[in-house]
Image (cartoon, rainbow, N blue to C red; front, side, top):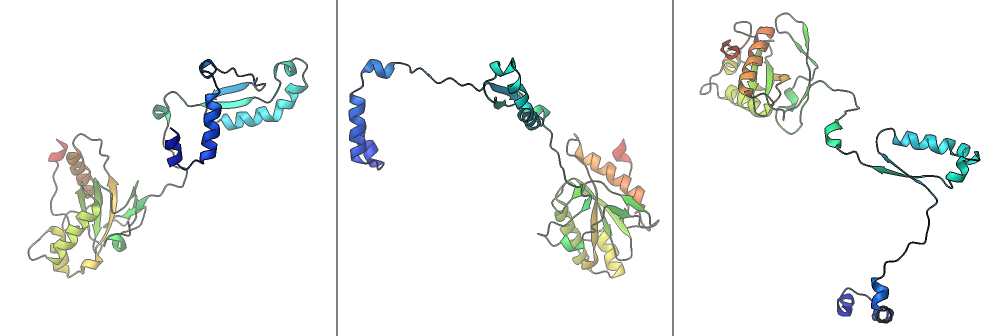
Amino acid sequence: MLGMFRKKGYPKSILQKAEKEVDALSRETVLTNKKNDTQMERIPSVTTFDVHSKRVRKVIRKYWPILMNDSSTSRVFKGYPLFAYKRDIQPPKTAKQRFLGKTVVGTFPCLSCQNFNRVIKRDTVLHPTQGTQIKLRGYHTCMSKNLIYYLKCPWGKGYVGKTNRMIRLRLNEHRSAIRNAHSQMTSVSRHWTECKHNVAQLRWQVLEEVKANYTNIDKKLLQRECFSIWKLDTLSPKGMNENWGLNCFL
């Protein structure tokens, strides 16, 4: 064993001194349990930790001199109590995530793709024909999934679409279809070609996010897409959506 400690860098003189001290001890002495002669005068106060623990401790510290001046309690409590805390039995079931900052609503760029400078950073969407402001809910970026999105051309016409992938991937497909309109003709690329718009003029924002806890997420996306097309009135000729159906509600 001395060789093992020597390899770790312990001085030889200290190891030899420790060896002599250990050899002087008998087997009975080594196996005997040591008794703790020290007595703690501070009474431990063990409670379950929560948001009020710090406040309770301050109150006890503030009014502790009153207990010490009392003739009866001064004989029981010799010193300031020792505070100790234990964890709750099942904290995951009761703990809830809390955001203390100001809630931000709207669509915001991720600054890492080609679509960040074309996003409409508003907490509302402008109705393309009526001009009214419609309030939005939720915080969305280019990385968000399961979305209903809105495209806008320079003339103010709108297009409502859906995607279960990241929105930036779907936007890249729209931009590619506009550049290659001769081979990838879509309702959006057809409008861009006929009106001679530039692909850089494409503006977009997220209308809503569909929660992934639905059993049939694709059907729910279709339902919300149809609702947004009806609400924003983006069917052709007023908008760029060429068709829609109500079969998804059956």
